[in-house]
Image (cartoon, rainbow, N blue to C red; front, side, top):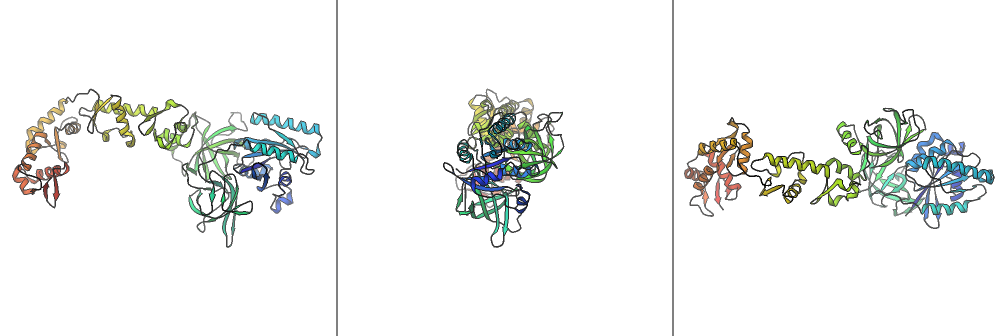
Length: 591
């Protein structure tokens, strides 16, 4: 596995000089950086580690004005060196950078005291003690430390050993697809678009297809470089340069995301649902951020201006409305920055993203996340829908509480939803004198899971089944008084039948449906119904004396039954539907 090691710390504390001492690479590559003597953009180098091989190094700017660049450099790190100068000590940006590392969940951190040649041993010890005091306040723990001098080389060998040990503790959680935030873009004549970034998730190879987000534009990898060398493939954790084949005039900018195929979704949009994990600057109200205030959200290598709107029930949840869309993955770490400034306000995670604000959608999501975490993105749809196929998720991916999940056939069901659905089914059974079919269940019960629910209730002897009809267990088929009256009307009407829509009687349509289910009435077409004895007599007359292969014309059927076309054609259609005859032009052939 490849690793990425980053720097962090206050401006002019020797981050770039240390990287140059470790790697021999000068990461300050733009004229303004050399003129001003400070890092502005991200710098990149590599270190050969005796255990872990080639380790990519990302050098970040330390000045507060460039905090957004610093965040962009940390998203893909496996580990970091927190740099504190022996002649300056702990500074505000030391705290801010450590908070960013914490927000990005970079736990493998080494405290490096630089410029040890400018302080004596006692001063270096005091600097280490003070730095670890701040680490305890921010992280809740102290960090392993080493003192070095990039000028004299003192402590550099020990630092390399410490880096090897540090990387041995890294256990990164990887996405299920190639995942790369763009941090640099070049467009060269004759070559086309080339981007750089840190690869996460799965490996990629020349010829692979990727999608560019936001938007989802497809592209193909023409060439791959790792630390200026052409390679056929790139592994997760590698600093990667990709030459892309992509449609002309496609917008490709820093902060955009390249992702491959995988099960997990790519979140994209300007309306975000976030959870705030920690406030880094507290106000009198204790939140650190005013509701409906403007701020910036930085995630991956992108950042965007927007406004934040907190949920009233659970104030750790908020909607962030951005001025432009961003892309990321579920539960991705991000930081909130004061708009127009450089103060790190809070750490957060992105839970959902949409192209526009839809109140019902956010209300549903707030109910899913209020006062609780979800173990995976699959859990969100599960709690919204109430079901998922067993083959698509393990119970531990859906809930930390086993009591919340019930197995039902090929489905995993949310216990609360199952209870609700079963109550609706039993209620339907109680109200049905003739039983009910699968299609008649309450619309709130998902069609996909109805057969398994009915099978479960039958197995528990709460329902009984007869063909496609279901009844409450032990329920008799006693007809209501109104149903009996309707049946008598049909019998009395004889071959004229009854038209349900013209009968003025309470719940006549429900009674008619029940009588049809029980076989007491037969639907000829539309609202026209026959009593079953009248139907059987008419059909018997039409089929009398007929054997397999005989032809029945409409005229034959009229003569045999004594009925007009109004009744004969629906009767013949029923015989065709029930498989007793088949149609040949306008005639029927007995089967």
